[in-house]
Length: 447
Image 1 (cartoon, one colour):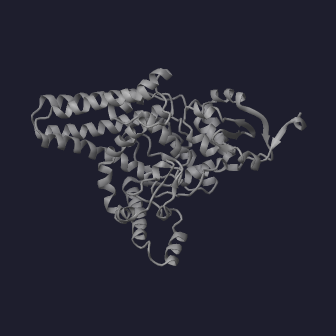
Image 2 (image 1 turned 90 degrees about the vertical axis):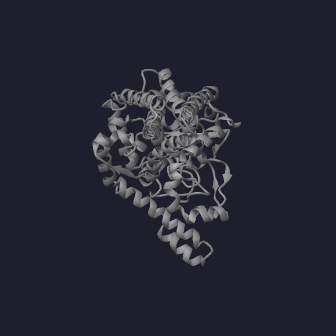
Image 3 (image 1 turned 90 degrees about the horizontal axis):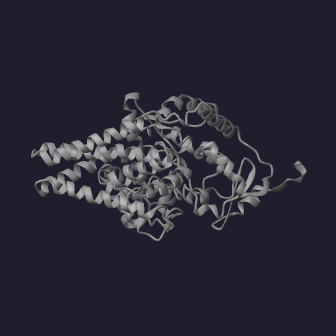
């Protein structure tokens, strides 16, 4: 039977990595996903980025056991010749299997219910304070509380995008639209588009959209060469304006984070009204319209324009905490250029992430994302389980001599600012002698 199997080499598999000709390998079996890419729930970015190679680890991370039975319809009849599994991947898959047997992916607890109730309670307080109080301080507090509401609501949207937090897929979709589009004004469709690409190509300078912030920020001098973003399909020009802004990025980082929400609003509109194929576009637009109905109406209920501006600014500034956290998780970690490799999934996730060390009573504040590595390795795992598996992940990293970075919130800020400052000084000296820049690149390849 083994002799009758048809085989292709890894090099032959790599020839099938273009739109319209996408092949992948999972546990040594080769599948043709050329037509499936347009219907893939996770979007086209994961398949386009990993096409032409074995993707077993990524498939294991993102799909429940019930998904395996659907693979046969895509089977080409070929097997990957000389298919080998690294020791790291073997241990990772074993760990994922053990978690599944223990039912950890289904043990979601009541975190989502508590979060929804807290968001509803905070929204009630905000509306009551705006409508019934004439105190400027109360209105300031309400603006800040609204910002915190948006932070917690975003965590619900994030959770529901990675795994089913409700009793059915239909209710889960309602939770996504409600927590994302309706309450925060940020489209779940935009989040899925960028976030899945981020997870798959974690900290790839040209494939991970979460690192592509030219002209405002650059975490690596490789951006100084105006690289092309494979995600956005355009050149990230490092022009004089970009050089000037990046030169002072360690000073502008926190002020920019305070208005970072404006960028998310803009990105949402650009995607929903683009020509790109958007799953459930009408539903996403409806959710955004709900937000842009209630939020301006609420602001208009304030007595004068100074208080309205104060209210909006206060809400935006509070959400900066979440924007900063996302940057801390990746900005000072390892970076690379090029497509991710399915054969070093575990290594890429450990290299590109940084955990935030905190007490268990602060888990609600960070939404579970302080365990960034654990989340990247097991994105379907409910946030309430991340602290429980953290020691196991640390042991696995130690066994294979891989980095496990965990810093307190303040230390993580220092590490991020240091990365931005180093790149900023290099931007100022970018026209200096080439040897100096090459030496700097050699000793700072982590970005």
